[in-house]
Length: 317
Image (cartoon, rainbow, N blue to C red):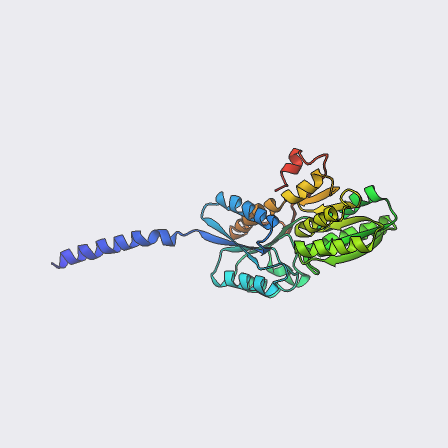
């Protein structure tokens, strides 16, 4: 009887061990946390992350964004929640260079790697992330300024339609644009006007600027929802093709504006690469590999002439 019980107990342990093996081997989570999920740009980041993690055995990617670009408390809560559930790594696009640093520090203290994408953290946060993957936003801003000057000349009046004041990408992008304009022209700059990445707000702001400045020669829309609102305002005001407009990012709305002449050009980042390389870099850090502190994911100036080229198609979404 004792022998039978011993055999039964051993068999039960083996069955129990077999039943928990899948749970023990569960894939490790890489939390991708962006500014907001409510734009095609961030959805393209998600696509890149999902494709990237598909080739990484033993890992999955989750994707979350705050309610809006200005919902800093919401984004902080997402990062802290990821730390509390002990994710393998965090890929983060911080909405503010400083507000996310305490949450990044918590991840660092928990030995959870943090990879930044799209927007930088402030200097105080440099120790708490391992790599930063983004467009060189200052250079991209300069390219947009060059494109605008090439069409409007070096005198007259232009406007900057921006998005979230203080965002790392905005500081570099609009800063690079303004510096180039100031150095290479005598153009009078109106703004920047901040839409907080709300298309409707950008539409209304651009409409007001156009109405108050009949002599406006050019306008720059510094991110996807802002550029879409700007383009729609130009169309509604009958100024499409008359006021030179440069946009940023490359969803189907903006591609349509380039094709019909509403926008002269769009500077397109590789959102897909940010997500794809973001998760791959996170796993490299987990594996103890050396990664670059900064990696430029590039930008392509897309116009009516090159919109169907392979180079443009690789970044448009």
